[in-house]
Image (cartoon, rainbow, N blue to C red):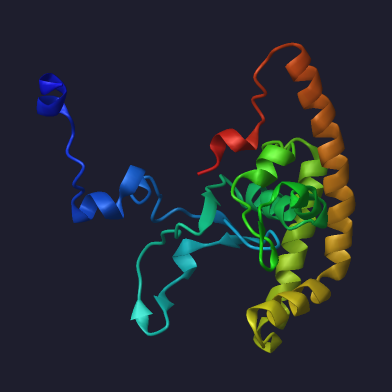
Length: 210
């Protein structure tokens, strides 16, 4: 007991220690070219591609660099195609509905999302040589371009803005649902085969999520 008391670590955290608990700040790439974010909690899963270099100010405050808050999960893609592929998968109704039975329930319905999209769905890492992956990325990029043209006209509450945005890209979302359903069906078969052979699946996105 005396030895343990002498050598135990202090439970008092410094201000820096609290801010950077488990290196949640210093692990981030402040000037990453691209980042994919999705919400940690909420009724529905929502993902977006963020371009940190394009963010020059927040309100009237000038900023340099970008960090994600604790209410989001992040991933740093290596290309625009990979970013759009992942956002296309996460924003599909297929993945959103698949995680519903596993979300915690609150007063207003489903709540926590966390890593469930990757725990429940076999979303493989982006493969630039896979035609299905490229098609998902292309449709997601098309949806982003369409939304940008309408962005100035989207108003109301957050819920109203999301509903309007979904309506604007409803055709792209329908295409993504079909493509992501195909992707998950193929990936699930591949993962099942890998598990039968007792191998680690190197394409498991969950391993790379921060």
